[in-house]
Picture 1 (cartoon, rainbow, N blue to C red):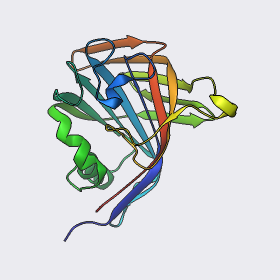
Picture 2 (picture 1 turned 180 degrees about the horizontal axis):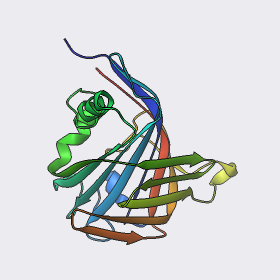
Picture 3 (picture 1 turned 135 degrees about the vertical axis):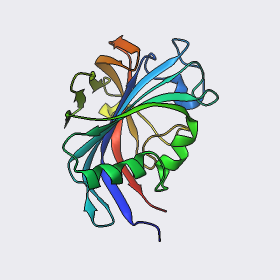
Picture 4 (picture 1 turned 30 degrees about the horizontal axis):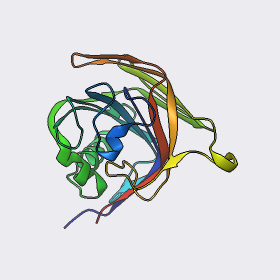
Length: 202
């Protein structure tokens, strides 16, 4: 019997491409390869009887060229605050085993470099988003200047969308620092996106 599950919260991503990232439209990355950090904060969530509220998940990925045609190398990070049962539930969801949107994104992964549980701090306030993974990563983005009529600049329903059904706000990084699995990234002033997300079993 398949599990019943649903997650809602906010997410952001930041990478080494110039804003706005061409990878999301299946074009080649601006720097030749793509190095991206994706972070999720679960406001409310359950996996059968396991509650997943207020937990964080992150994924670091590198692709040597076009993200749609080249396999991704990824590292997955789970919140150290998660219990063993919560960790097992998050593993099933974010590796695509439980179905839902992640089961489609995971088809791009060619190699999993590692899975870790570490202290993580996620902040979402106004037009800013940030994440700290202890000893591994720090990232902060802020929405670009507003578009016409004072509205946020957004993209929606692009082919590599992390959060289907929501408009992603085009942003720019204040910082992206990542050091793990032989990957060392230090970027500023690069692409960012953020939005709410909803994932559920299908």
